[in-house]
Image (cartoon, rainbow, N blue to C red; front, side):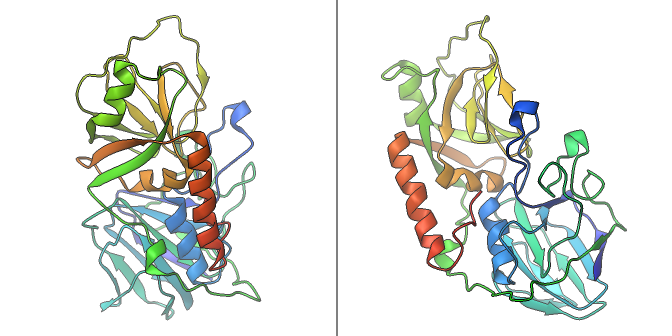
Length: 313
């Protein structure tokens, strides 16, 4: 079983579960930028949530199914057609051998996920099949796909059980993102910086990729100590460099950083970062660590009710 990439688009990579347990070696997580949408696409066709799928950035993508197979789409709703007929999101679709799936550009969001029954078959590297292009690790030859690439597809699970995904679990796309943020170690409670962080509205700039998203707004009152040591950072960490324009770190982010940490996006909201477009507004909502844990547990419980307790990474 295989498929052929006819038009790879701006950036299409193979992504699966993150590469955890390696950050002490300086190896980033990688994995799907919107892990929830990727997991749901897999669940729709009976794959495990961590099966390797295609992450398609801004659409403009087409693929030919060399053999008949079942697939599903989730994430940014790029208009999709299979041999000219419309394709719904969040539902299993059967493609005949030789059929071509085409995606246009999405009107909202950034990344669309294409999962196929049995998953994309690529080698696992350091515990994950996910691609980390900056170091040419994982995925298909460690790189973004190009026109003409052919990918092997695994065999569907023998006892595969497709999940029915309620609309309430689909990622709600917006141009104004309200993200729960726990204050960082370098923000003093009640300070001018603390007040700015939770009262100002920021805008995402064009400096955005799988490593991070730059946001800008009023100049932040953040006095940096030039002797500050590098410290561990993670996807979801918000750092501010000397120019005062913060970065929200994403799945391919570095493992350490030497800029002040404004806070950390709550895990329950972290998957949303993969869908923020340049020009979108970003607003931070202060949340305590305990409240963030409860919110994540509640979302996990909702996912567990439909058999998807492992859908969020």
